[in-house]
Length: 430
Image 1 (cartoon, one colour):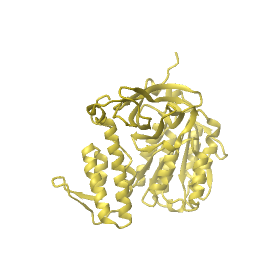
Image 2 (cartoon, helix red, strand yellow):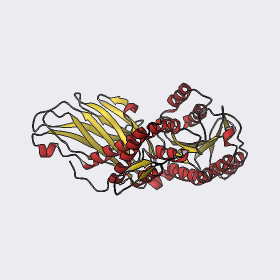
Image 3 (tube, rainbow, N blue to C red):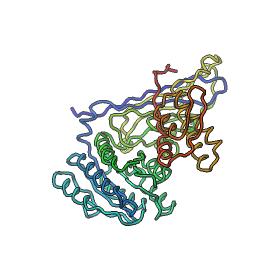
């Protein structure tokens, strides 16, 4: 019997709405289980490693980038399709030399490492061009787990914002890309846009010596993916409307604008490839108010593979109208928790923006509120990042911006602002 990945969907909500109520909130938890490691070993996979070789990398960074790329190459299993790209104002094939993927084996592994050892840093930065080449390389491998690693240390200074947007539109849906910024000369917003569009992550690497371990970890995670191209498919009644669909764990990501219609009153929201993991989504649906005691299915959530139509798991989002305030005013703890995590991220973004504009009073107020909220919600990692820019007196609750906030701390807080923590306890079912 062929071993397969298994998925479960759990819906947490308070289904009770007051008379005239029209907004339904639910947290949809998706968990991948089963023999995923075994399935992943047999899954077709393709990997592209993109290294910024612009002139700004001509420090110890290019040497550490070479080590990191070699570590990733050593981590990819035999049989994986792979390629290495060097990025300047153009995208250059490092290995193989032609515009195609190689297949990993002992010979190609050593040849790729030899090619990487010759990387030099000299040129500009045009990230959209690099991504377009990666998308073309992935094109023959539809159905495979397609993953890229992108490393840069600077701005996309040799392309316009419009050119980068066009490149992202070209690449969207073709592969997942995890982005890494080394040093402090890169822009969080720029890499976040790339990672967000391509369903990947963004991470700051202040010290280039940490690249090797990070690349190895990313390659290991990519090799653990067992199922490619999974989507949330949400059906709603004719009288209902989806207000938003957001990933809320492990990071915040608004998927609302990614909807692809998949049938009458049904749309797909891409989630990328899956290994052994748990992700959670906040779904908000607007419905037409019903009568007291009336119950309806406000949404039917499925996890599917859009290309094949295979359903992997499903769950219902319900609505019931009541005149009992004790039922309708109860807020589901999981919905409340992730609403708070979204507020935490917004406060940090608003505080950092105010600081950049030298509006220190607003920055203090927003970041101080974020610090207290991080502590209340148990988000210790974010609290530590806030402590790098704030002096916080837990006894009095007072906060003060540090006299000097270094660039590395600002980047770390910006990057970390979208990471959430899961609820501390199992909430009541609504």
